[in-house]
Length: 123
Ligand code: HEM
Image (cartoon, rainbow, N blue to C red; front, side, top):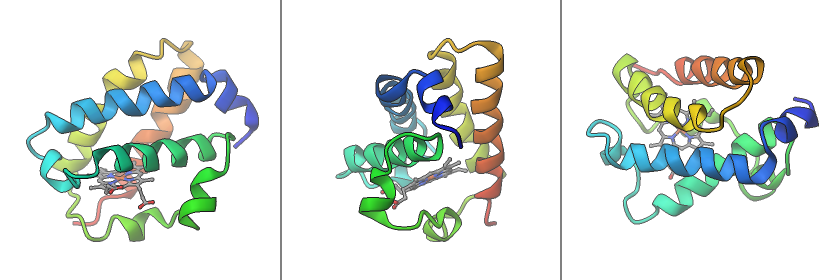
């Protein structure tokens, strides 16, 4: 991914906001909340933020700390069906909207998240 997208989306503050809003929603979601470590929500927030920043051309902190993403493998311990995928995207939607991106940038980000979430289905 080009460095452009990281910057075009708004750089570090945008990713911070995106992932923070997402996790506020996850905490209130009856299906998702129990899947996340309730003693380490901050850690989970940080891991997702670092991953997304790296994916879109920002700092490589994710791989420096966590190694190769191998996201499907890392999600194997969690039962993810269509309902969980939809709940995850429902938590993400208002967070993406909040960034107030142009239509093109919004579609770029949202299209990626939809595809990635479907890819994570393992049930
Ligand atoms: C489809 C529904 C999804 C569910 C139910 C789900 C659930 C989870 C859970 C429960 C964790 C563990 C939290 C932690 O301690 O880090 C996690 C980690 C993570 N998820 Fe998801 N996830 C989903 C989709 C996605 C998608 C679409 C992405 C990327 C675009 C993603 C990226 C990550 C990352 C980067 C981590 C941390 C991995 C690590 O380094 O340990 N997830 N996810």
